[in-house]
Amino acid sequence: MPGYELINREEKNAVNKLFNEGGVLFAHGFEKLRKKYHVREFEKNFSKYLSGYKCLAVSSGTAAIKIGLKALGVKAGDEVITQAFNFIATVEAILDLGAKPIIVNVNKTLNMDPLELEKTINKKTKAVIPVHMLGFSSEMKEIINICKRKKVKILEDTCESLGGKYEGKYLGTLGQVGALSFDHGKILTTGEGGLVISKNSKLDKYSREYHDHGHENNSKYSRGEDTKNIYGFNYRMTELQAVIGKVQLKKLKYILKKNKERYNQLDKVLKNKFEIRKKPKKSIPNHDTFIFFLNNKKQKKKILKAIKKNNFGTKNLPDAIKWHCSFFWHHALPAKQIKKSTKTKKLLSTAIAIPININRSIKDYQKLAKSIFSIS
Image 1 (cartoon, rainbow, N blue to C red):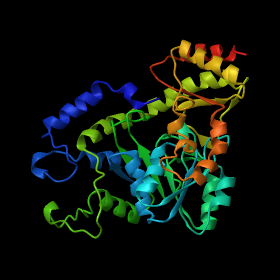
Image 2: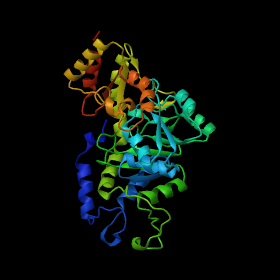
Image 3: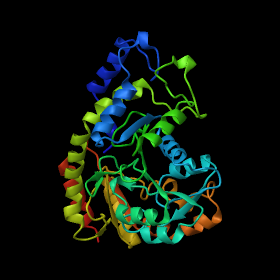
Image 4: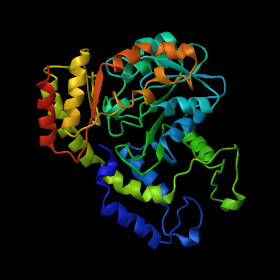
């Protein structure tokens, strides 16, 4: 469920309060004009939710991925492995650093295939980006073991799976760096926005400096006389985004509960007729999307009509596959990587993804499940 479904008076009041406090929308300085630093509070609140991991709020999930890769030392010419079912932002972040995206296929989890990953890693590989697509964890135990043996760093793209867990740990905290997104379609939204999750102070320090033009924000100096060690860029989150984010974060537990209730209505009916997306062992999804497979094209066409008749849509599969499968990214990837994506494209063409929305009742999902099940 996207967080925008729960935007109400609480978010509005938080924005109004920001203006009543002085209306400073910038995350740094202006001490005499403000009462709080909301971006820093948002980071602190998220760190508490994620069991103490370092958190840096930034301008987007795409920025979070790029910053994380920079912190891990990825440079021009390095190879970074990611998966064929994805959103193009991950590949764009790699390309923006001058690095080379290397594609591996997904398996029935619809996330990175560890077997193919192991065959693909080589001496040029600088980092691996498993993407926890549409609420489900990647098979992280296998991926972590492979990367440890090969001495390769992991950045978890958790932009679509906030709140999900693997072996008791939140997704985004298993690799060296994690990335979250808060765009308007994500489980929590600040309109645009993202979060860099780091395991240690060194990665967090570099990320903070890089996202803020190299500012160290040295407490001994004013911002105008601040010290610096590196050049950076501007990927800062605004106070306006942060006050909304703080309210949204308080709603996450409720969102996860309601997601699961609706997801289960589809699962308990449709698992008796269709192959359901595989859930990795010891993982807990955030139940953002329900996905199942079928090879019968005529049946698939009928089901899509039934979904539409029930006033539902699909989510990425099949409606936006061209933005979520590297097979279609001829403008960004060389022919070799496009060809490597063929297996994933074939698998995704057999899938239907149903979004989980809180503004649809449990009865709506029960009716939809029965409607789909009845189609032969």
